[in-house]
Amino acid sequence: MHSTEFSTWFQTKALQQLKQSMQLLEQTINEQMQIYNLECKTPTNKIPQEYLEFQAERCINFFKTNILSELQQACFNKKFITNNKIAIDKPIKLQTGNTLMQRAKISAVTHTLQSLPQLAFLDIETDGTNINTANILQIAIIKPIIDPEYDTLSYLTTWSSYVLPWIGYTEKDNKAYHINHIGDKQLKSALEIEDALIHAVYHLCHSVIVGYNVNQFDIPILKRHCDKYNEPLLYKYSIDLYPTIWKNRKQKLEDAIKAYNLPINSNPHDATADASCCIDLLYEAIDRNELPNNEEDLLELFNSEKNIWQHYKKLKIIEVNSDHKDYSHLLYPTPQSSLKRKLSDLSDISTY
Image (cartoon, rainbow, N blue to C red):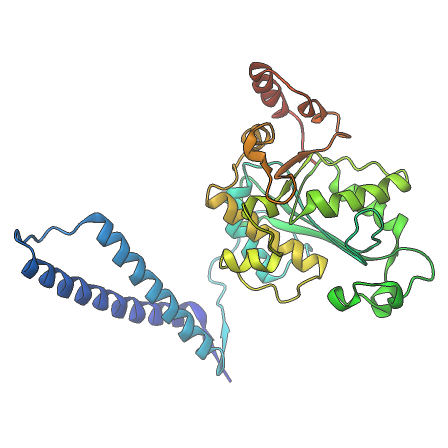
């Protein structure tokens, strides 16, 4: 396997594929226009905008498919390298532990997340589905830290841990082992539940929780455990991607990933992997105008009819934490004029 400088290879192959795609586009348009003019009573050389947008999108998709196919084939017999030609002249946060893929993800969504408060992507794994009895076996929290001046150098902080519900808990007690595969090996390195809650509460404090089915599952279970150990859960409010994406049916996280054509989750039912997928889902939901991209509009959504999905039970997209004093007033009916004033006051609240 020999080394190849990636940018040089990509530029060459991309130009070749783009040329082929454009030639095919030109040929298709010419043929279809000629046939159209033969059938039309008033021939024309003017091409409708809708038709051009359709053909341009097909051309771009053809180019994308071909260049990705070229790259996949090349990776079998080439080792791509990069030449660091341009020195970094910006402040850098080192020792974040972020992989290259994590850096790419946060860079891609930074412009969308900049207008939002501090987010905390949350996922927990449990030994059952009953929110009143399930034990927590794993907690993961991913927080994007956005540098407003140097967005390409933003990073993710991740805290995750396996959790031991009680001393002596074993793989046999995990009724959901066939799903999450959290067994004795993982439990050996697990934090005791009280210690894990202290970490979780710290990382979620004054943040906006984002997750898939968090309002109906993750948060109620986490809050039940926090209440038991007198640990205050002081997040601001939460954004549930489940009712955001599915308006009329029940679907799993992997179905949402497929529906949005996102990279497949290679480690499903691992809390860190599932929380990471929610970063992509949130970006897509905002990009498709299914969610607002700023706090004021998100909190206005909380008080609107659009916040509640009533397919098989009432699910809320935005849920305010009654224990957070700066947001608890939103749980009570408020005149519209007063609501706008209170929303503007929230902009002065510092984030974690």
